[in-house]
Each structure stands twice: as C-alpha cells, then as structure tokens.
Length: 257
Picture 1 (tube, one colour):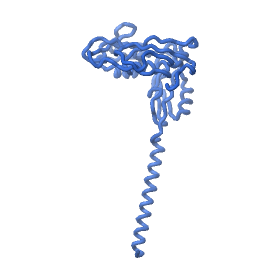
Picture 2 (picture 1 turned 180 degrees about the vertical axis):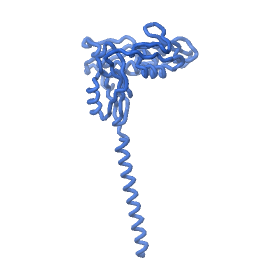
Picture 3 (picture 1 turned 90 degrees about the vertical axis):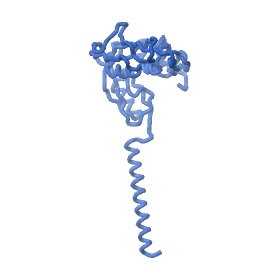
Picture 4 (picture 1 turned 90 degrees about the horizontal axis):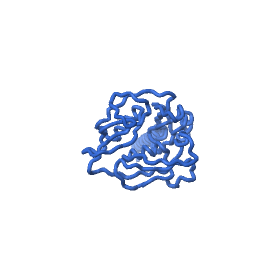
C-alpha cells in the first residue's frame, strides 16, 4: 500500500474512533441527565411532616415540593394529605412529587362548575380547587359518568359558591343502559386515601370501613393499610360501595400485595 493510501486509511480510522467516542460520551451524558431507564416507585408520604417527606424522598431518589394546602379538621397541621403522582406510581429518579399539606386554619375556595364533566375530570378539578370527591350517586341518563349535580352534605352547591377548603363534594352522575359495570380494584396494602382514590378510579364508592382495635386516632387511620376487602377482581355496577378493613399491623397484610 502506498504511503498516501496508508495516511488516508489512518486518518479515516482516527475520525471513526473520534466520532464513536463522541457518540458514546453524549449517550452516557444524556443518561446521566435524564436518568434514562432508572425508575422507582413513588413512596407514600401521607400523614408525614414535610421534613419526614423530604427524608423519605431522598432515600427513594425523588424530590418533594409543596404546591397546595387544604384544611382537614382532624388531621395534624402541616402533614401531607395528598400527593401527585400517587403512591406506588412508577416515576423517574429525581422526579418531583407534588404535595398537598393540611393547613393550620381553614380557607374558603370557589366551587367550580362541574356540570357535564366526566367523573375523572370533575375529580381533577375538585382537587385543583382544594376540594375532595365524595360519593358517586348514579341515576339513569343517556351519558354514563357525566356529572348532573354537585352537593355537600346533601345540599346542592352551585358554581361560584364559597366553601371551606378540603370539603367533600358528592356528585350525581349519569348511568346508561350499557357500559355500566366495572372491575373492583385490589386495595390490599394501600393506605386509606389511596384506597378511596383507587375506588373512584373504578367509579366505585367507599363502603363500610372497618378499623382494627389498635387504630385509635385519625392520624392512626391515615397511616393504616388495607388488609382485607370486599369483592376484589369482581365485576360490579358503577357506584357500588366496596368495604375494606384497615390495620397498623404489617403481619396482617397478605404478601404479594
């Protein structure tokens, strides 16, 4: 091979090696920045103080950020009431988990107009306003899961009304003749609020809630987990009430939750 040809081959190989190194370096850098492929389960921060939540978040390689507050009379001041993403959700390492904490004093919020919303849209809007979804009352209507009425303690409320933050809003929603059943989710191992959210995700209601004798305070109930439930995996009509039992004893919680 001529000297000139060797020089060309040598430079081509050098260029290929250089670009390969650059591509590998860029790929590794991108993985470090985006933490590509590294995911964790979002911890359950319910009933933790912000300091406790920050410590638990650090141990789980995520971050927490307080973005809202509600007022729950029986819950400790400043503790976490709700979070997004939900406990158990798969998130990237370094992801921020947004916390709603319990405020020291109640504040008033404006009731949104939920008429015509789907149940899931209505729940998201209520949570954005610092309100909570209560019972789903189904009545015959052509549009399944569309909101027909909103009320608190049996009294209809209208858009623009002022209510205490953290209030529970019940919804009257439509139920068509078709597509009116759902599968009962498995609640075992979930804390109370997460279990109720899971039932609402499936358009079901919280039924009879049974507490172990060791659960004496509201804070205890928030920390307790479901160890027994009704009808897991069964098909039920939308709006059916599903009961469950809560415990603070981890031995009672079945494995494989």
